[in-house]
Structure formats: C-alpha cells, structure tokens
Length: 290
Image 1 (tube, rainbow, N blue to C red):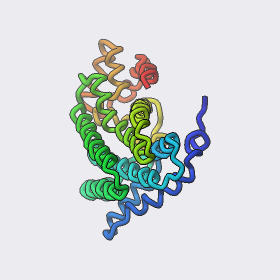
Image 2 (cartoon, one colour):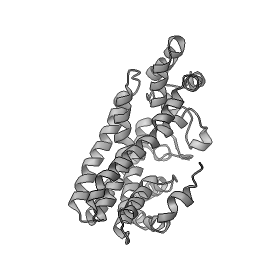
Image 3 (cartoon, helix red, strand yellow):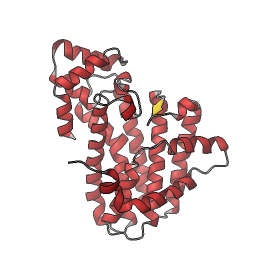
Image 4 (spheres, rainbow, N blue to C red):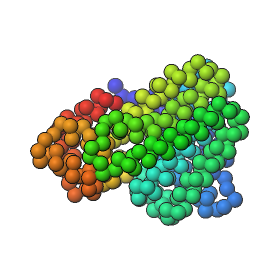
C-alpha cells in the first residue's frame, strides 16, 4: 500500500497547515539580526512537519471547527522541535541536516545553542498567549522529559550493553513525547479532555514507530535521500535498535564487530556492520517492532 503524503495525510488540514507559517514567522521575529538569520535558516530547512500536522489532525478528530488556537499550538510545536534539532546537531557535531549545512556548521556552536534557547523561550511565550494552565503545565513537564530523553541517549553512547527497553525509553523522550504533546494539546484546546489519553497513546506508538524506521534508514538508505551522512548513528556510537537486535542475533566475529563499532564509534567497519545488520534479521525485527 502506497501512501501519498499530500493527498492522504496533509489534505484534511492543508489550509490550516499553510496558515500556521504566520505564527512561526511571528515566533522567530527578533530585534537581533543574527537571531533572525539563524532562526530563519533552521525553520526553513524543510521536513514534512509531522508533529504540527498531527496536532491539526487531532484537533479535527476532536470535532474542532475553528482551528485558530490549534494553528498557533502547531507552530509552537514546530518551534520546539526545531530547537531540539539545533541542540542535537551541536551535541552530535553534525554538519548536515536535511541536505543543508546545520546552524552550528554555518555559524558556530555558541550561536546555535543560544538560538535554540531563543526558540524554546519564544515557543513558551506564544504558549502563554493561549491562556490555558493545563496546556502550559503539560508542555512544561513534557519539555523536561524531552531533555531527559536526550541525556539518556548521551549516557547510552558507546555502550554496547544498552537494552531494548533503554532504547525505547530514549526514543520516547527524544521523539515520541513531542508527538504526544501535539495530540494532547489539540484535545485540550478543542475542549475534549476525554480524547486526551487515547490520542496520547496513539501518538506515543506513532512516534516510536517513526523513530525506529528512521533508525533503520541509517543502514538502508543513502545520503541524498536522508539529507545526512549514512552511518551517522554508528559514527556517534549510538546503540539504536538495528544494532541492539544485531547483537542479540549474532555470535563470534560478527558479534564482536558490531560490539566494537558501538564502543569505539567511527565508520571504519560501516560496510561490514551494514551487511551484518541486514543478514542477521535485525532489520526485519525492527520493522515488525515498528
């Protein structure tokens, strides 16, 4: 089954999605020219913007007709997501994202970190304008959990002993939590709190699947399609699910190669690791898990 993104996913909220950019442009406005330039660079980097789309679709599912407040929330979510990507690129020392130079590569780490901080602060400034304490509390707690997920990932780097459960805890924080906030926030603003928990559960599972598939692509795609270098996860010593599964399914030399690659990082054994991940059944397991 082939899914057409524009026709099958975006179409129901296409007009609201287009209008959302007005709020994003408002959010990145600054009297400091450098802040504006960097913010514009990272916001316009592309991507499907699945998190704000999820917010708008959830609002529709809740029966909302006028989505003005949800459009603002969708913009807030995209700004928060963009800020986390900017910070991620600094932590990972990444030079490329979505086929474009990262903010830290274009300017420097200090500028990227501070503009990431600006985007988070401005997102909460816009969030306050929505005048809903339940929403504000949810996002305050949620952004803390996102940061905790990133720290968990940092702790797991170069650790071949990382378990699948630890991996799931990491991706829930760094990826799925913002999907959950998007749908929960839509339910809150739509005045349908009874849908908040079902939407959160759906979004959490969607976010996990989204991240697992993204991690698979590091071993199956190419740099042009990904918009970043192949093997970046291995380079950074990140024990993602394909590697965790490959370790479970191998012994001897193959097991040692994967384990050593996680422990040391780098891409010296990338071709061999890709072959092992493919032949060990790790990718099939990951797809089933997703």
